[in-house]
Image (cartoon, rainbow, N blue to C red; front, side, top):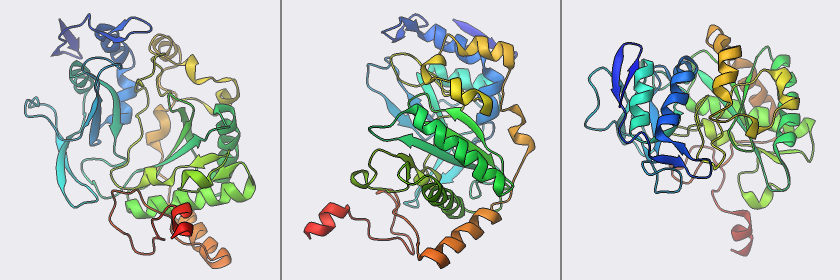
Length: 331
């Protein structure tokens, strides 16, 4: 079948293929979902290098991440060259119109993973992304409690955050920032926030990279701000049996929200009623200086430094030993 997306024709092959077997949701319904929330998801993706998480045979089949733009890329879909931690580069798609979203859906893309940069400047993030990840023994409600404390913390530094569900058990909070600082600076800013949350909520929050040290706490995943780490975009569907979506929320909604409330069949109605509740985020751009000053203060007062990077990153200056603590003790 052919879709009309703002005047551009986009082909949708095999529209009756089942993508979510538990609910009988087809590729056609996935396309209809993204059409219904097109302005919102485009706001989250516009001009950002974007990795596609593709499920050509539905969520029960094999899937993969596509970072490089395919050879059959339409001439109207722009790309940007990004550099991986290894030093290698790739040209990734940068959606600039809603048709790009539906073009990717036709390839079996369910979840969009944009970089926190724009294609005009791929070295300086314009979003600080804070991932509140519940560990075993904790849940979404625990993440909500930490998110409220994070909101107060951001406010105390003159910053503002926009929360959304992850589509799973966690929460994401975005802070738009001026594109003046590096990925390393953004990562240090999130580490500083995480450490301050640990201080304010002892026993409830952790920045421990090693799972064996986290305990039943909410992990502030600071490495989501490392280069080549991405978070599911707003309105992205997730590969879960319930077909949940990573959904933007207003702060006052958090206490009543449940992740499974927001899925492929409920979010379009919510969007039709409320629109994109994060639409005003792009009207703001905050300075990272207060958080970088906090990081320096923490280093002076408590002697803390950097934390481990993901395993595929080269060793970074000031990074501690990248060895699991239990193995280090045995050694």
